[in-house]
Length: 251
Length: 286
Image 1 (cartoon, one colour):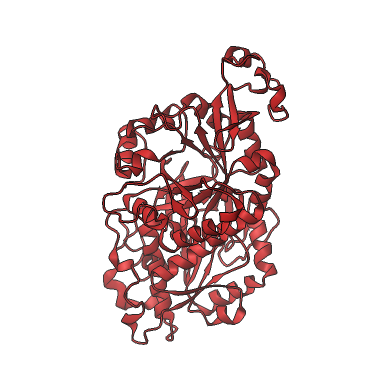
Image 2 (cartoon, each protein chain N blue to C red):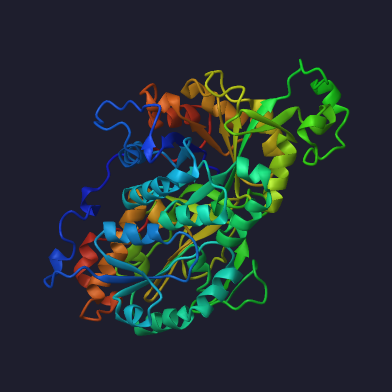
């Protein structure tokens, strides 16, 4: 990628801008599934103090929580429940802390998935997860270009996706959430496919920001910023007016 | 939208890139992290590291390399070569690799594919297949015309010693151990079976074309892309960026892999993407 934004590099002490100097603590929920190190390393790269963890106390104290996931919906849900992390995820969302779901970690936030009929999702978001159209190759394993829906600058979608309309992200998936009012961005893959959703303190991406080069790191940096605001203050992200000047609504 | 991926392949041994990579401004041409970062900067869509010195003694250095790359490089990368067990796969994936690729070990014990897919998901299980055209000079006869009339065998049960045209109906035979060992197995049948077992992607290399610069073997690529539902990476034979688009247009590949043209400064990733783009294909801009 040309034009890598040096602002994403974390050589400068992250958190230096916010007085107390502490990098926001982010818990990446570790329930034994897949490659989680990439998510942790990418968050550290953009200024977080990120931990792969299943420790309730560490998760409860985190400023923000990330739920990753790869593989099958049913297998991920049972592993998550077995580790007791379903309750931790629900608590973090209920607390209003910034919450990021990635890939199957996004899909688990919904009520159910066609991939694993009869398995209940977390149900933190309404709706279901459905197969990609059978007119296209499954999985979608490629980079694709985000098309952001119009958003308010100070909304969750606005704060996470600012400047990212039209950027390319890396996808590996065979299912996706059904389009709804929560849809924040789509990609074209045999028709519009939901790429991101946003609601209150939840943002979820079907793509892998930790594997999407500079635009992916930018999105994670936006998340770290939300967590920084959360730090100490418990700030309501819907009223983060001090950032409004930086934001660019999608056209 | 289907966007074609451009994938540089780096050969490594004992955690170092070998066979030389010649970037002008790079002091240590053997440092996998620096090379990976450079390809990331150039706009590569993914990276493949092939451990050619693969022996069990150096697994730890390969795992350490995966961890070092994962610290600095935020595009997907695959590690192949010497992955023989679920534990091998686990250590590489836990270290930060996104996918592992299996080859000889999967031919020897196909259940390895199912085990990796079950444990970590199909998306991280790449099956690498090295294929060669069945020689027309073989005494027992492997002519394609004959092969086409004998499409009954599944090719997988055939023993090497009993190999004949009916074992290789597609005319392309699987080789293992870096392309040295014929197996008597049909490339297309093996690809199908690998996908049935849980392979999420096929990395298909023509050993006839590898190193020649004559372009991909489009016939073999097409035979496999027509047979399987998962993405196929075409590999082997790229001598210039003009060879890339035919792998997609003629071969039906979803991604193109090359080594030499990128490593020695003959072409940048941007050149490769321009060539694909000029052929009317969609790529993520470099």
